[in-house]
Amino acid sequence: MDTLEKWPQPAWLWATLLVVTGAPRLLLAFLLPNPDGDAYAYLNTIHAWRESLVAGTFTIKTLRDFWLPLYQFICALISTAINHPVYVSKTVSAASGVGICILVFLISLRLTSNRAVSVVAALLVSLNPLHILYSAFSMTEIPHAFLVLGSLYAALTRRWMIAAVCAALAGFTRVESWMLIALLPAFEFVVRGRIPWRTIVVLLVAPLSWLYICWAATGDFLFYFHMRSLYIRDHYTAVAGYGNLTSDRLWWNGSKLVHAANPAVLLGCFVGAGMWNAWKDRLDVIAVAVCFFSYLGFLVVAFLSGNQPEIWDRYGLLSFATGTPLAAWTYLQITRGRPRLATVLAAMSLAVCVTEAQGQIEDARGTIKNTSAKQIIANSLHRYSRENSGIRILCDDPEIPAMASISPDHFVTSAAFRSPEREAILAEIDRLKIDYIVYQKADARSVLRHFPELQQGIPLPRFVLDFPQFRTDADESAYLYKLK
Figure 1: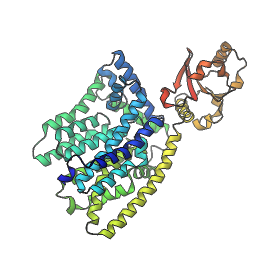
Figure 2: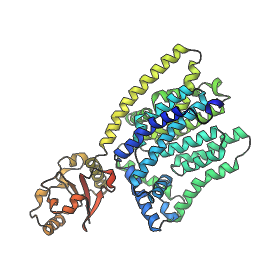
Figure 3: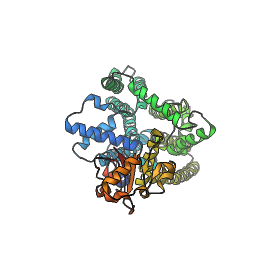
Figure 4: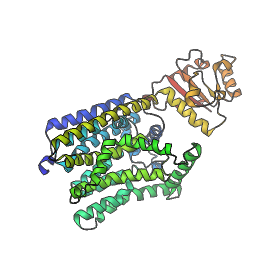
């Protein structure tokens, strides 16, 4: 095992892994627009923080946000030199996705001492459609998973301070990694036989810093948790049925988790957990298993307790990455000395992975469809309509009302305007009490053709550009304006 783990592995191996993992992630990062929702919220924060850093107005209070701030801050900091927040944030995610695949290989090699099986484990993650897709988006799931795996591998190789730093960074990215404050020192204590005070101090930096940021910005240490509770309450109120754990909801969320984490990987982890005689003296296997089941359990408990409204596909990607090395170890334990069984299990696992990949490709297509300009505008209008039940929208596209799930009564077309003069159009907008305007370049009969600036996404004194907020994240064929 020690020989296999020595750096470097053969150059061809690293080159292959880097190309296979990096090419699709970087390519999609530069070609695929972000979906709306969380990705756009992160980008808004990154853009605002970049402007604040450049202007010299950035303070500790600025870091207070709905989410923990590390990913956004790193992207904003890089964007001060490379003024492209969209591409910077997507590149950070893509690079993190590549790092995860490399760490899966190294952790698998640590557990199995088998280079071939470890490469297969890494390729399983590298070629996973959902993992590739979310590595191309401006979201925290992939960077966070990279930090968690970095901490896990450093702990397995007894690099305790590196493990602590990675865990602290993970805890400053997503709150679920605060559990590492207990898990990492416990593992170090078992290995070294003494209380790791330095590790504990480093790990406490993340939660204490976040509590201080909340206090500095709002005067309330627990502001983040209050805001999170309010968000969950509003979410349950707005969406009928979320308050009940029906069989349909349990099935839908459970299937999403299994789909993202991979059934073969989950089965391998649960089977491996029951092989007491094989892992009772293997602290490295125990550490990986504890990491896998802790994050998986956290997600399940959060959902069942009502602290997580839904389990989306991307939430299972961390369990997929941490569980793959454990599943690889289980496979070798089961098939040791049984070549025929090894072949059968490998074929069955391949069949499951191919089937899941086909389903994930279909899911990815649906996600990509939601990145179209029209769909993002429709999603935004749907969100605004929930905030304003009397919303009025000027739109000449007959598909938008259905896409936005808004009654056609809230929409006005250009046919309602009686004069082509700019001042008369503005007066008509006031008379009709228009709140938002959808303009598409394909709308040749749109009354907004008399405002050529709006055709280029240039806001005017009465028109505030709502979409696209980032020119590189849209095809610039459609615009959404808010009326002042």
